[in-house]
Length: 228
Ligand code: APR
Image (cartoon, rainbow, N blue to C red; front, top):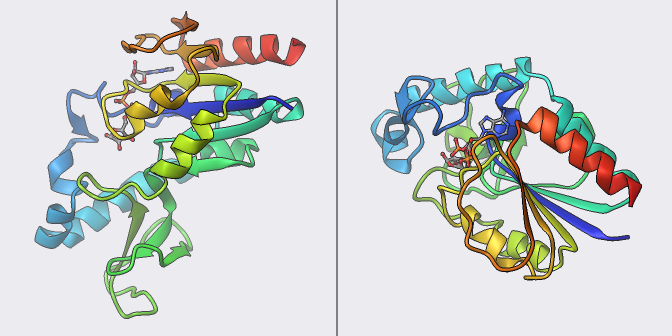
């Protein structure tokens, strides 16, 4: 079976009601990123950071996968599919995708604040201050903050090297190292970009730009790919 690799960003979850980062004039649900999504923010005001991610988690649990998430899951009928997502929501999994790499973590799990590899499921929508990991440190959202390492990046790059088809859906490619992944895809491999506002990419070989929102562009492309 051919390998399809799909890199998704906040845009694929926009029509599920989850805001993107750069469409909301630099604020994330009214907060400055540096006040809620950095290790310094956690040091300075862990309660605000915890509350921010509890609010985000509530929105994620209330959101539903959209037609784009379901279309990508349907690709598994005929292809070996790997979704590499920058998103911290679980909408790909809830749509039925079985092979999802979360570059920036996933908000539905918690992690130890001293040992990131220790992660736990979360019962409900919030992590409370005072809830501790097995080492006795405060639990936090299992997400990668700005300035923190992206442990899955080498694994994701290796996956892109093996792609027979590549898709980029709903990402501005504004944040590295995720934005560099498209450079690992073999030049002859077709690279489809689905976004109402196509980001600039300087890669060689066939780039097919589909200037549509995800719920229109992704099902249409998936229909074509399932015909092959
Ligand atoms: N369908 C498809 N794409 C859309 C839609 C839609 N309905 N609405 C917006 N978009 C596109 C925008 O045009 C933009 O290109 O989604 C992209 C969103 O870009 P960003 O907000 O920068 O999100 P993303 O690329 O995922 O950000 C990457 O930055 O803030 C960090 O860690 C955070 O994972 C995030 C990373």
